[in-house]
Amino acid sequence: MRRRGSIINQLLAAFSLFAVLIAVAAGVGYLTVAHENQTTRQLTSRYQTLQGAQDKLGVGFGSAHEWMLDFALSRDQQYLSLLRQSQAEFAQGLATLQQGTPPDLRGLVADLVGIGAKWSALIPQLMAARQGTPHARALIAEAYAISGAFFAANGGLEHLLTNQIDALSASTKQALQTGLAWAGGALAVAVLLVLAGSLSTLRTVTGPLRNLTVTVRRLTTGDHVARAAVAGSAEVREVAQAVNAQADEA
Image (cartoon, rainbow, N blue to C red):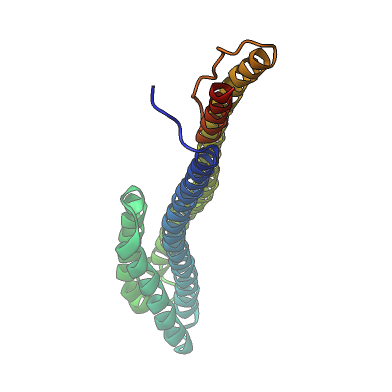
């Protein structure tokens, strides 16, 4: 039977194990949550950038539509400068969406690109059409139809982007809960291991001490052949050896 070391050393080993497991639990929980938070922040930032581009796209298209129709109706040259500014804003927003849109949203962006191309092709025709003619009125009606299609597609894209951001927020919350659950589970395992180690250590003390008590009682009642079993922790074995030495001298 293997001899046990000092009870102090055993307790120190148990508490050292407890400290290590606590550190591991805390580390695992922290790394899990930190990784998920970093990933989610990056994705959220990306989607917020796309959302800003989508807003710019909508404002640019709406303004361009307004300035183009104003010019078509009034032939006031000041609207052309405003139209060019709005077209540039529209182009910037569209370029950002094309570069950063994830695969599941590219279909809507492709629709917006197609609508933008139709609108760009319509602008020179509106500028060239004579005011008040049937052809001019037909082009204006077409412009309204294109605008309706654009805002429907842009609204769908906005809805999906908002849903993606909400889903990422929910994912962050879930990751936090998962990390805390893992940390709590590791902590529970650590506590159970320490309790098991402590109970084992107590048994190495209480059992030999009980036997030692019985031996001392026998010796005091005249049973001089009684000897204590040298077992248990180092401290208990030392006491047992001392009792046996006194019994041998007697």
